[in-house]
Image (cartoon, rainbow, N blue to C red; front, side):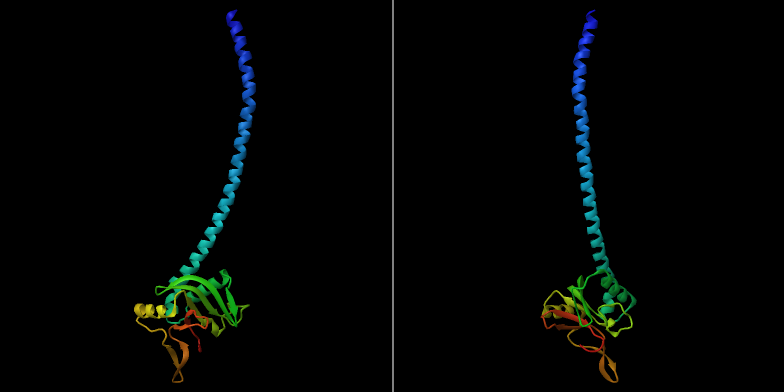
Length: 203
C-alpha cells in the first residue's frame, strides 16, 4: 500500500516536471536552429566575398606573372613576341584603361623592371574601340611608367644593365638610324613621369 502511494506521488511530481521541460526543450531546439541558419547565411556571404577576393587576386597575379615572366625580356630588346602579344591581350581584356588618348591605352600595372617599380603600362592601338587589331604598326608601341624619379631610374639601369637607356638606339634604315628602337628609351614625360618606351618609329 505504501509503495503504491509512493509510486503515485512520483507520477504526480514527475509528470508536471516533464510538462515544464518539454516546451523548454522545444524552444531550445528552435533557438539552436535559428542561430545555426543565420550563421550558415553569414558563412555563405563570407565565402562569396572570399571567392571574389581570390578571383581578383588570381587575376592580378596572373596578369603580373604573365607579363613579367614571359615578356620582360622581349621588352628589354623592344621585340614583339607571341608571349608579349598574349600578355598585352590579357591585360586589355581583363583590365579597364586608366586613360585613353589618340590610340593609346594606359593600364595600371604592379610590376618590376630591373629592380624598378612599374605602376602603369601604355599600349599603342590603331583604334581605341578595337585595341586588339593585329594588322597595326602601333601594336609594337609600349611604355612603362616607373614609380621612381628619372635620375634614380637612370642610375639603377646603368648599375643593373650597364646601359644608359637615355641614349636612343634605333634600327638602321636606308643608312640612317630612324627605324624602331632596339631597346627601351628612358626619358622624362611632360608630366614629370619616368618613362621607358619602346617606339615603332618616332618618339
